[in-house]
Length: 301
Length: 301
Image 1 (cartoon, rainbow over the protein chains, first blue to last red):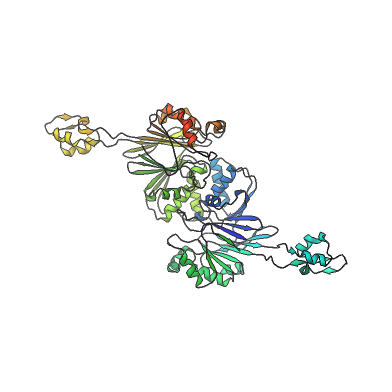
Image 2: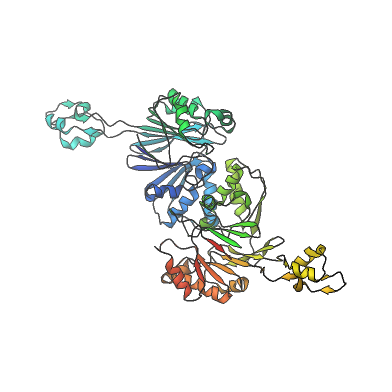
């Protein structure tokens, strides 16, 4: 699993400060999460192939998380995209986008499929052979979801030596990869664990932006391999975080600790701070393994 | 009159290629014309003070000319703007912008005033003591206007020596600046031209993007000091210019010649071309005084 930070600043774009957007790469599929103004240029800077993006997840309808979406959709059209595009976002997003397409008189030649969200409970919204994505309802000023990306049913790696030794036919390879026990040429049942290599462990990544401090998300992101949690403010602005329904770095650290994640990624920094180093220092008072999101940073999980 | 090119490329933003947007500075007022995605960052790069922008003109509702508007409006809010903002654009622009503000739950604290346009005839849409702006109806795939910026009623410069010599009271200064003849202390009428300096000549600038080749605009932009005319294509793509209702550089040159402008500024280049030099060469086959718009170029008229 690989995360590319396209942008990680809040509120407004500045020279060199991109707004919220990430590419999540899992099992050869890439997902775009949030799409602030300027995201399409950020994607180019990070050499992300536009044609590979088939699913876009929008957390909420504050501009710094979605004003770049209509431009990206239009650019896909100009590039003669033919593949379907799925957009997952709050109820209302379809009308906002469609009305702009309508005004331009330029309908997309590819199929644009909206999955509008309005539930306050976690929902499974995407499922493929090896990936599941579900919502993480967040507590912000308007309806907002985080997203949990999970690898599932990963194919097991074959232990070729053991397969030969146990006289198992190679015709069973797919069955074995899927975890089944099989019968060998002598008619004996061979346990799957004897025929496969330990190793590939399904990973999970939780994206939580924007949200106030809210322990109710802990049960949803529990034991995830990495947690991106917004940290708009430092502790000296904790009051402001309350009124704007954002979090501080220390609060992000608390959620990381409670949810037993392996790695906390901070981001969505207010641009009022000259340096982002203090976010790490403050989060570390609660949770040790912290890294700072930075534009164009790649994080392997 | 000073024009700052914020962006001058068509269709989609790329690294280092900004979309249509210009700042027109006249008599201490600044106007923003068109506002593609990324314009707010372009304005910062060109050190344009956001608070000085009070009037924004949008030519048409293709994304490369206005997708950056909602972001700019939101940023003005975040910066606690209090001054009114006037937006001039095609009928429908108000609903598109207001619906996005509504979805974000963040109303502007400043007054946002829309002037929606739907006439196919030229209209005077802005008027102050020294400036007039009128529309230039253009022929494109959707409803589109160019804009003509004109200095008017410029105050005349006093010829202090002549005023003394003719025994004219200094109390008449304002009258003289406005062009009136006055009576001197001996009771004689003194002609205004004797009391003022020749010099300040009212300038005019026509912005025409996007449009197919259309001679009907000539009478509207006639004798302007500078004409920005779109040149999306080179002559080898003249057929494409017809089907997409855009112009070639040579066609822009023809309009410049017919309208007797002093200076032709080319822009709105398709990004299919590796260099923009050919646009100048092709336009010059029709009209001599051509310059190429380039991002961040400043043009004094």
